[in-house]
Image (cartoon, rainbow, N blue to C red; front, side, top):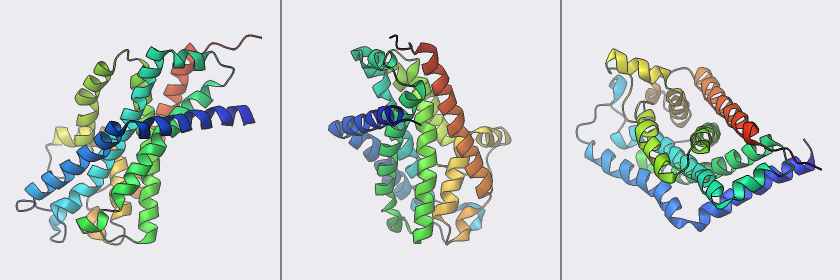
Length: 265
């Protein structure tokens, strides 16, 4: 890995961070919406919530916490890749594609930029865990942040692939509502697979995000085993989440390489 390669990725990463924090509406939308969802839905279900697995120690706020953290990562990662559509419209993307840098540097810089913002938002939300009744240790907090890093990378890669083929932000939001939100709902964030109809259970098992949420639950609830009922094993969950990220990184790289114009000297 040479210096120009690293510099190109770092420059794109910093640009994504700067761009995000200059647009406060994106910060509020990516963090505020899931937070309101967690508070309102969690409070609304508090009296009728029945913990899966028969646990009497878990509240609705606690059960929804990992899913809300995942939703924050999803929103932030996906919103960050909207910049690809904006960059194409403004001509910046075309300039990057004809620059004498590796397509891998372009993809890595964009994905790492979106992932960094998503992880920062997830860490801020993680500070609210005690309010949900989740008693974390330092090791479980660090493990949860590690899972958030993997999820952010994978979901930003997914957003990159979707945004690359889009010509308008309106189309991107339509895809998000049609595909990404159901993907989150079927990840075990909102309700567990246990007790769901068999066809719905299969959809949840085929959903790669299910395993990211399961890994997050296992790390968040590490001191309290009762919260890990009927979940895939942690090594399996981490492996599928890593594979999820690698597949969409490679797909992103393939799509950029098809449009990359080599620099002529």
